[in-house]
Image (cartoon, rainbow, N blue to C red; front, side, top):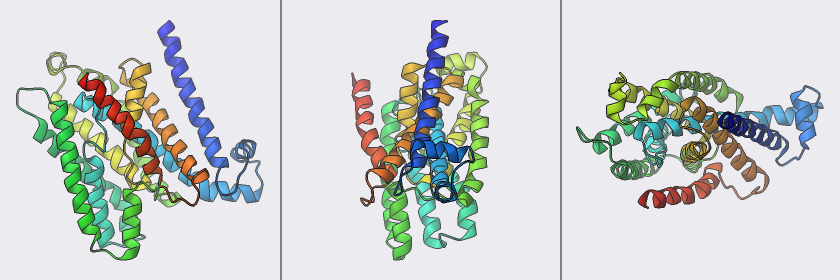
Length: 334
């Protein structure tokens, strides 16, 4: 009974914190509103001036933060289950770099406003991210042996470095406008903060959430050692492939909206596991709420307190996430 109360307290607290940061973000910016005005807007009682600013400028951006943060949090749980490694993240495993190369190539060949770019880039980016993780998995895996966490991270960081260098080489051939867009994306500047981008990527992310959550029981088994999972009748190869596909899709669609964001998956997943049992039915909602909170909070800080500094949201998240990553590496070494 005590455990149930603690679980409920954690989930309710995260829900309230996420809703509070949503209201705070909606009311913060160049033109300040109080939280009461933001709440009245949500109830349809705001004046026309404030309603226009919130609905057309702030709300799409906040929804991007919530969707992308939640999706990256969910992907972090998937990747850490897939690798059985608390250091696993879309950045350290190369998904960001793989998706980034595809996005950079597309931007170099297409106009940023091209309908093809808007509609199909997330799908192409998913393929790039998935192929990168598959390659890292093959490099790290030895037949008959468990995956080495150290080899996995080294392979991921190495391949990410190679792909990042490729992105820089590609950007050397694009015009100034496209170069600015690519650099902004690489730094984690939110790019899909409009209703059109949300209408395209949003439904797919919601679908991926549902498909992922429905696999909670199988993922609980996948998180055990291989012998136990096989003994319980799990088809390991197929489940790993599906897990990889879902994680890559969640990350790639998020990155197409929010730019190159790293560490949210690692942070949200690891912190959730400190307060909740290793049950994906609980870990998923907790990591999603925490990811949404971190992403929206970081964006609110950059928009409110760092106005004029041009600091992208991704940079601030990296400043928070990098020390935590080093802390986890130190803990693993101990």
